[in-house]
Figure 1 (tube, rainbow, N blue to C red):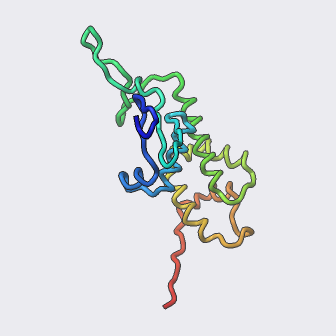
Figure 2: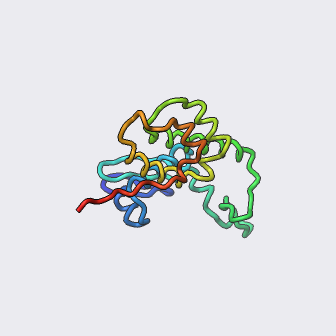
Figure 3: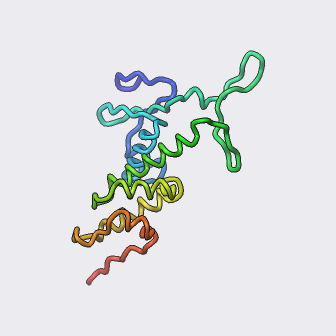
Length: 174
């Protein structure tokens, strides 16, 4: 029980500032990552005042337990080089790639050619391969786009891999 809220197995009470302090990741990035986990249905969040209750979906499936026969049961996370046979694995990748595109689209300041940009994103598996780099670079470059007419179309930005471009340093005049 936490401030009148029943906390169940697989749930945690937390807030963005405490997650940021514990991980060393900015509040904005924590918020993006939590959105991504919600869109892929790995977690759900319930806000309760100044804190949130985060629930790990299918929590019990991830826990190992010993059966009466003495065998360990439960789903394990695949390590490097390991693969689990999962019929829905390709569907999960597509869903995850689509949800990362949605996060990118929400942040990109010029909303044109969404269908083409999404197709490019999914075909190149950008959400799977470069999501963190893309979002970090986009945040820096957005700060430099002062005039909307000079913001590149999202398809151009993605096709030319402009997330690899260096952001201009602000020069200080003393």
